[in-house]
Length: 334
Image 1 (tube, rainbow, N blue to C red):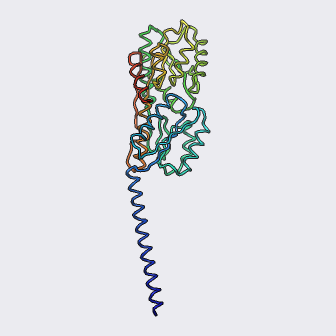
Image 2: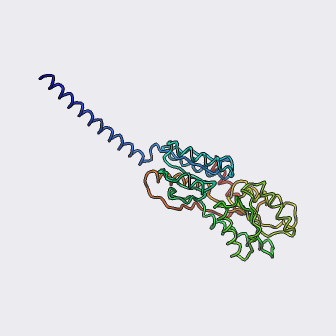
Image 3: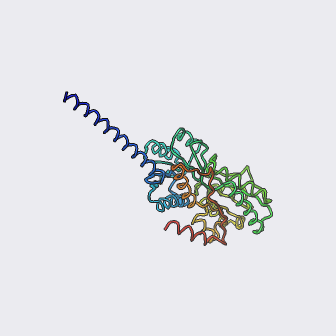
């Protein structure tokens, strides 16, 4: 009889112990959820097009600045070795999505259509930066309104060409990677701005130089060969290309007053503008772009609503404000 009583008491004690453990686990889970909702211990993976350029250095600095301002959030920035290392970036995305070590992702896609396939079905919050990704998994796009910014740049370039004495206001574009959504948006913006301001955008003579300087130099040599009397405006996809194009035309009197337009507003562009090698640049707020993209991702992880498009802004840089822009950019990388 005593043995039966002891056995019953033992069973009851074990049951109470299990209930207590269950309640403890519930409290632990609640604490974990509360910690995440406050942004404690979160990890954001930023995957850029590349980390091997000045422009992407500013985006990276902005991302890292968010981490410094919010030490409870770990910000891990990675990128491909170049803007044509497509498979390398896709491998980074695939590996990191499968790793389960991040709570959310910020991605600047080299090939947006391929990234769409890679992220399909993921439950992690994803924010696109610089270049949009058309997928339901992407909650927000943080970047420049590329077409709008280029449109303003195209209009301003026409006014500068007029002031430089050009009568035939023709413009040729040296673009980035053919088919890239960012390059296409800038082309459309340049075209619209030039044509609306009274210039003539030469659609049939667009040069694609894969967003790199050496190919832009070769493209400019081809333009010079086709237009020995000069062209009023050469509109480039980025500043490295604009500087290279201007150097290719250096010493050619027919191109002495050509308006060389870049895009990004990086340090080398400001220096080139001050040296009268590049004429103007459409500056992106790359640092703000990086900062705001991580900020948006953290909000999404915490369940907060974020805007579908967050414009990081743009500005026209000429010799009048190039020094100010240069000083600002240097302060970002200190």
